[in-house]
Amino acid sequence: MLVKNLFLFFGIALAVLAVVVSLIGLRKEGFPSRKALAGLIALTALLVVGTATYAVRLSIEEQTEREEHKKDVIGEEASIQPLRIPDGT
Image (cartoon, rainbow, N blue to C red; front, side, top):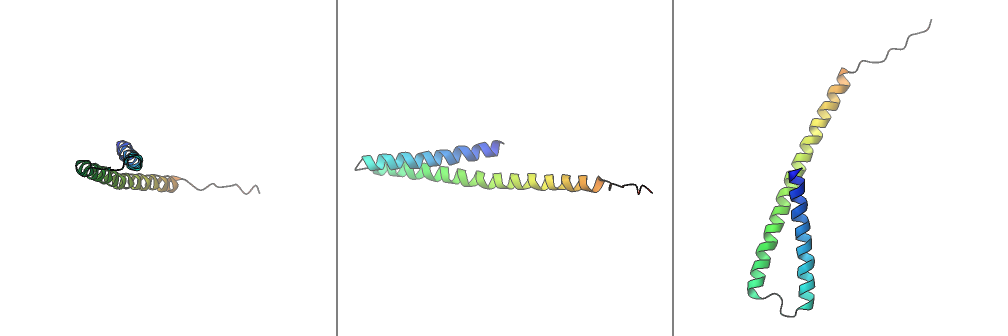
């Protein structure tokens, strides 16, 4: 659950950053300055790496859960006895 929350945090933060930078860039003619550009690139890179990292971790975690669930279901199916219906004769 923590991995999913971190993935959502980084993904939402990346999307919000993109919208904010776009809005500021449309309104301000000289945007970004050299220092702001370096900071924006670093922040964007951090958010992209974080989002990608936790996306991969989340997919691995979900795959593991699916495989464990599949084993449980197969185990339950193996323990079920077939239903025998009496002939009635």
